[in-house]
Length: 169
Image (cartoon, rainbow, N blue to C red; front, side, top):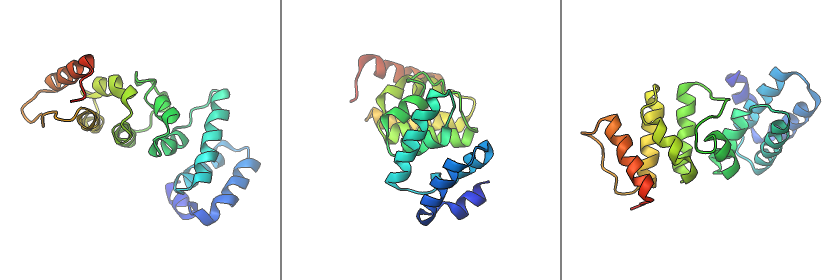
């Protein structure tokens, strides 16, 4: 599906993709169109995804890729949903490697409400997520050690203490 999205995901196809999304009722086709739009960095696509997320959540749908697209633009609402309001309970969780890319966005956007989720993710079963969480926290808490000689539990404790004191320095 991503190969098709790569081929169609070009700004010159944007209006065609918008029109096709509106006319089809097939969920798989709509998902494919979302994938293609995900490849286009454009304010109109961002506005489309923002409206899609708003409309879909009224219907109870989960829309990981539109949310992730918006999160890449540091959209606070998308970051809030993806971080599960800082608790990490987003139900549309993709595969481990893809989710670690989402976790990186919390640090890139300095999205501090995700700190509790990031701390809880340090010891995630997926090492990519744990590494992303530690790197995010290091960005949010400058002066953090390199953790070369720390256990995961010690790293977690370090950030729990930093978060509890509210110390950014």
